[in-house]
Amino acid sequence: MASETTEPKSKTRLGRMGRNVYALAAVSFFTDVSSEMIYPLLPVFLTSVLGASAGFIGAIEGAAESTAALLKLASGWWSDKTRKRKPFVVAGYTLASAMRPLVAIAQSATQVLLIRVSDRVGKGIRNSPRDALIADSVDPAVRGRAFGFRNAADNAGALLGPLIAFAILSWWHVSLRTVFWFAVIPGALAVVAAIFGVKEIEGENAKKPGSEVELGRHMGSRFWLFLGVILVFTLGNSTDAFLLLRAKELGVPVALAPILWALLNGVKSVFNIPGGALSDRIGRRPTLIAGWLVYAIVYFLFARASTAWHAWALFGAYGLYFGLTEGTELALVADVVPMDRRGVAYGWYYLAIGIGALPASLLFGVLWDRFGSGVAFIVGAAFALVSAIGLLFLPSPPRRK
Image (cartoon, rainbow, N blue to C red; front, side):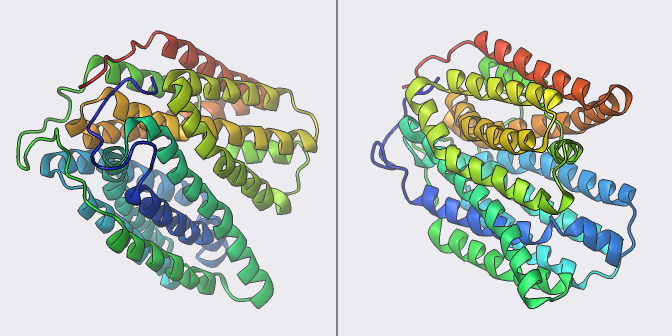
């Protein structure tokens, strides 16, 4: 599915990713540095400083992610209707960057809930229009590489952010609130990059602003079939917190958990660009199937693992799965829908993942509690295998002129 669509190439030279991809990669990098300086420390801050319960922490995350999932659909639809992507990108990143550091002055868990939800509102506003803008900005021949590049920058920021927070806490011996204030700096750099680096793209085949754009029509059967396969995979893709819990079972010290997490983000960042570029060369479908097979193998081996070094090796292999799939999935969405429907298509894509994420984690947790971690991981592997088989039956889209 790599090059199954053809589109006008006036926006950028064939084979080049262009200004918007680099600008949005910079925005993602600085945003994740800011975000990951705060959120790995947030559970400790909520429990030890503000006295929140574990249940309330779960409520915060659930409310935040549900809000973001719904807004991604709404903002994607609206950006298609207005044929403007940049205002949503700038507004979303600005809101998140402004709200996130306010955790530093929060005096109650309820205030953190409001701040966290506001942060995710920003994510909900920006993500679908941002991905549509990337797809609008590049030739289909480099679409996978473009999404892979942005994801690589995103994961690099997720790697650097916790390390910066750790360094500030270790060297300067400041409070958690002070670390949160430092997150203002990369957040501000992200907003500057969005305002001055991102350029609006006028789609040659797009509808005029104000024309009717419906949420579910004219998407094509291939898109809905792909979305169904994504939902099945997501039902077996529980929160990665279970991987950290499994690592603890295998003997990885809790103190090394941040390093293990950094390893995962580092491997993801290294393989994002090659994975996206591979989908440009051999096709989206085989690349995505390969990634999901890697996921299934890793989950099966997590079920069979017995020592701490197994956890380290499997976390590294798990990063390869992300490298093969993160950019490929986003590129495939753009491949199978009309150009003027990309925003709402990404909204549906993110909503499907959001809908599947909660039952996936609940199912995994119940299986773990009742039958042990091995059974839970094997079931997750089975969902990935079923999804990979389902992709084999996904029809290839015709070439669009």
